[in-house]
Amino acid sequence: MDKRDRRSIFIGAGANLPHPSYASPRDTLQAALLELDRRQTRVLRYSPWYSTAPVPASDQPWYVNVVAEVDTDLTADGLLHTLHDIEELFGRIRSVPNAPRLIDLDLIDFRGEIAAGGAGKATLPHPRMAERAFVVRPLADLAPEWRHPISGLAIGDLLAALPADQRACRF
Image (cartoon, rainbow, N blue to C red; front, side, top):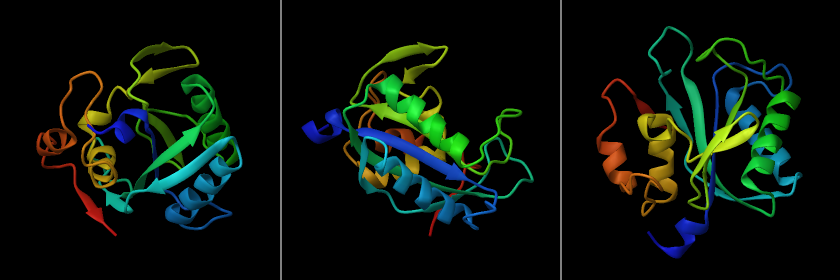
């Protein structure tokens, strides 16, 4: 992993419901990334956009997903709170796990830090990111040299280990 990836912060964004103000899930996520830029966090670049099957498999609509590299002076916990504030601003209602949603913003990796999390605290890296094509596939495009901070596995190895039913199609 090069120095850039060790210092990088990655945010995963996804949605599979149209938003009443922004229309498509992609438009909603683009607006959320702009909002992130207004909140002490700069979006440096982002992956290609993907259409991804719901996880676990279900009959709900496919998701639109992207991974963004950001920079901020916030702590990991501060950034997590900012992401939750933006989700709330965009109408996210947390109901049952894996429910369809207007927006989902996840802190995937914060400069390679490892943290156990807890109430209101970031768990780093994101605990299920390595098992999800909707994170691994766009992250592989954005940071092909990235390695999982705990396992040390290369992003290509994580991609190869994904279940076949987790489909991700580039826009």
